[in-house]
Structure formats: C-alpha cells, structure tokens
Length: 588
Image (tube, rainbow, N blue to C red; front, top):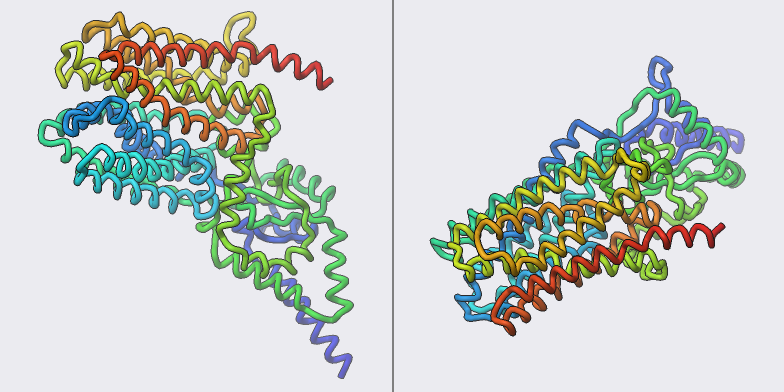
C-alpha cells in the first residue's frame, strides 16, 4: 500500500509540474525553471521564441491619438481660461488676486496630484485612472454652472476639476512611454502637441460662448471633459507576443544560467522581475519530495492559474519601470534595454525572493490592504532624500520659479489686452497665437533635443539640451519683462507667439534633463518631487501677480515679476556643468 501511495504521489507531483509548464506566459507573474524556460522558447517547429511587448506601432498609435485629444481638451481649457476669468471678475466684482486663485488651484492640483495619480495608475491602470479623472473633472465643471461666488468656483473648478485633470494627465503620458521605445520622442511629442492645438481652438470657442453666457461655457466644457473618458478607453494595457529572436535568446539564456530562473513579480507590476537561484528552487523540490506533500506545488499551480485567468488586460504597476516618465529618445540610454522581454526585466532595487517565500506568503500578501501598494508608490516618488543632491535641488528650485511665472502671463494677457483697447475677439486671438507657436516650439525641441549640433561644442547631446533649456527660459523671461513696451495688437501677438515658442522647452525637456542630471534609475523619485515643486509654484504664482496688478492698477508689474522669475530660473542652471565636473572629480 505504501508503494502504491508513493506512486500516486509521484504521479500527482508530475501532473502539477506539467500544469505549470503548460501555463501560457502571457502575464509577467510566472515562475520558470532554467530547463522549462528553454523549452518555452521553442515553437512547434523548434524555432527560438521569446515574449516581448508590442511597441513602436500598432495599437500604440491609437493610444497616441487618445493622449493627444486629452491634451487638446484639458490643456485647451486651462490655457484659455484667462478669457473666462476676465468675465468672472466682472460678474462677482472680484479682485485679480482673488479670481486668480481659481486658475492657480486648477493648474497646481493638476501637477501636484502627480504622485497620487501615479500611484492610482500603478494600481488600477491607465484606462481606469483616466476615466475616473474625466468623471471627477466633469462633475466639477458641471457644478460650476451653478456658481454663486468666486469661492464656489475655487472649489468646483480649482479643486474638483484640478484633481480630475491631475488623474488624467499622468496616465496620458505614462501610457505613451509604455507603448514606445525607439519612437518614444516622436510619439510623446505628438501627444503633448495637443496642448498647443487645444489653446488655438479653445480661445475663440470660449470667446464665442461667453457672448451667450459665461455659464454656457461650463456646460460645453462639461461635455468636452466627458469625452476624455472615451480617449482614456483607448489606453488598453500593453500586451506581449512570442517572437523568434536568436540573438536575444542567447543573451537571455546566458543571464538565466548565471542567475537561475526568473520570477515575474505581480506586486511590482508587469515590467519588473526578481531572479531566483536554482538552489532555492531545488530546496523547494527536495522539501516536497521528502515530505511527500504537494501543498507548495498545488499552491503555486493555483496561483499561476489564477493569474493566468486574469490575463494581460488587467496588468498594472508600470511606475516601477525606471524609464516610464522619460519622454526622450531611448537611443540616448545605453543602459536601458530597448526590448523589455519577460525573461530579462529586472529592477536594480528589487529585493531577491526565494520561490519558497513567495509561495508561503502569497495568501498573506493578498490580505494586505490594497492602499498600502498605492502608498508605497507615493512614498517612492516623494522621497525627499534626493534633495540632498545639490544638482537636483538647484534644478527643483529652477522649476519652482518657472512654475511661478509661466502661468500668470497667460491668465492675465486677455485682461491686459482689453486694458490696452483691444476687442474681446482680438484678445482671444492673441491667446491662439500662443497656442500655434507653442506647438511649433514643441515640435522643434523634439527634433533637435537628441541631435548633435554642427559646431565645435555640439557633439554632447546632453549639454546641448541643457543649453537649449537655459537659453529658452532666459529669453522667455526677457520677453515677458518687456511686455510693458507692447501697446497694441501686433506687438502683443508677437510677444504671445515668442512666449509660446520659448516656453516649449520647459514642457518638453523636464524629464529628459532629469535623466541627464541624475540618471534614469532615480527618475521616478525625481519626477515625483519635481511635480510637487511645479504644483506649489503654479498655486502661488498667479495670486502674487494678481496682487501686484491690484496694487499698481496695471498688469505691467505682473509681467515684469514673471519675467524676472523666468530669467533667474534659466540663468541659475548655467553652473550645472561645473558642478557636474567637480562631482566627477571628487568621486574619482
């Protein structure tokens, strides 16, 4: 009888292992032995296969279109809001400083929500987060129709719409970076160009709707914001397919033989992995055979089957990927694998786990509150220890000053134009000029940011990007401070266009410069902190400029204040190359 029991037990063990081997590798949460991995990389004809994400094309272009229109709708509303703000001040007899709090909260929360939005995106995916943000923003926008005071609009537009836009902004960028690697710079460039296009379209639309009623503007905006949920519906998760790749297979197997086999960890998301040693797996197998029990194997099989049934469509957790916020060309990052295959993805800061620990703790981990995972992402993105890096601190302060100054000129430009005698239609067209040139600027920055310049010191692309950023912001500051010399439609339109052109580098190069300055491995943390600095800047900037306008009775000093802040934010980065050289020497 004992012999029969041993035979049955052995058969059950083999059946369990066979079930594991037959599980399709469609979700990065599967454990593979070294021998099993080799077999799974063979198709029916014996060709070498590997699983890679479908990137740089296909459905990715639909995702780009969805992201583009989210920028058109959301940024179009924000950048043209100054036209509506002028009417709101008259309706409620509010001061510039008080009314500007509406737009400062709207833009500040859109940016400041970055870490929280990233955590929610990490947990629930880009599609769900975008749709949720659209519904929240539409609720705030619709409620604004019944506004009875500026304070009411501070809550409905500033807080509610700001939080909604914040939840839309993060996944709209993240999903594009997930779908593109070689063509990432071009794809993200197309997506963010929607902001300029939206400004061009929404400025005249807002001006026309105001003639009916300023409340009508919010009705139309509510419908438009709801359309963002349709755009978010295109953000389906990245899928993986099996492809034949002999060169890649050799590289993967070489790494596998060195480290063992791979466990794709569900907790860290679809694009993270933990390596398991063969010794750990052998210990588990020995334990199973010695004890004559199949609990671990059965638990493992159930776990894999359960994840298999969930499928790729629900995979999330991309904020653990180092390059997820990087919008530049991936060819500039030699340390980043262009093809993130399921067998080779790993994060430097992931802790090694044995499969025994994973199996034993799986049920306990599933009982942990889901909010802890969200909190971990927020904590990672807002780790202030990075502020000890003097180069990053300098860059963060520069971003703070830029954020204080870049929004106020757009907010008060329509009112300033009206004070100079321009018609409402002309004031709206001045904002449209900004949108056109800002779009052109984003395209130009995207084209030249990764290219070597035909000059003696133009071979270093990272240095070229820094000087492009510094010179653009400095010139933008000088132009803004010089608005007091603009006294007609032509000069204001010229300023608006040049302001949009020079400001484009600030939007396009933020994450790229972060990688140049501190490295790709710290980008997630750095980007989270930068978003907080930007959020603070955009909250305090417009009210300060509005207060200056109230005190002086003119918008001239407001533009001078913003111009000086922009100029300082650019010039303070001139010393960065010298700081980098000193750091390199001290490290050596």
